Length: 227
Image (cartoon, rainbow, N blue to C red; front, side, top):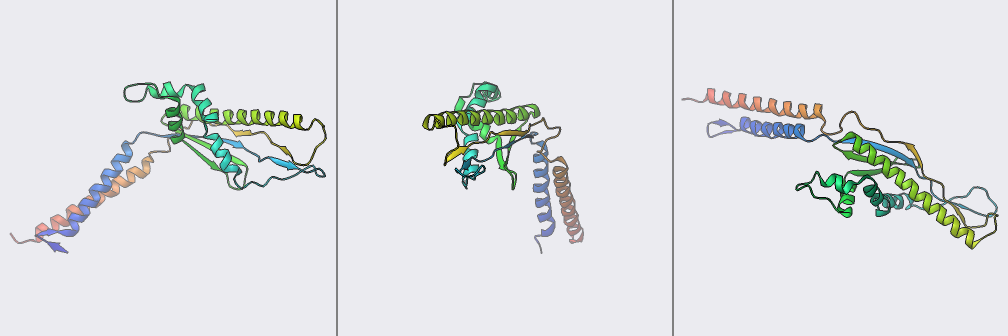
């Protein structure tokens, strides 16, 4: 389609190419983001009947519950305090004012992602930061803090069970709560996960190519138009 003495196709290609090329440049200019991952093994509690040495515990909400615990104040609050993140991140904010503990926790949640390794008892704690060492340090502290919290909970539970049933023999309904095991510690990443520079460069070059084609069609139309 051509109208008003110009190539409609050329104008469309110019506009699309400009948008794509600018998008590529914006992605290239985005700050680098690094990711570090710590893996922990979180076995569910095991319920042991009287006549068996091995039992089971069926709880479809177990993993979701553990996710909520990891993201709760009892875990992230301790991480914020131990690493002094409220002050550390506050210095990077406009005005360089300290963050509150709650604000630092919210910021930490936005920089963290939890996922389950399929068909395993492993939980991956992913932390994102513009500083590779910071991402690894936070991921490891989250894993260690959650491990310590679960250990404290297990100890309290054992004390309460011993008070309720001083007999050393196993009784029906007893819950064995295995300890959390840190399988893989997070390490500082060597390269950022964002931006994907090869992809960004490809987007920019593709947009530039569309713009060149657009110029070509426009110039062809102008050359064919009678003066």
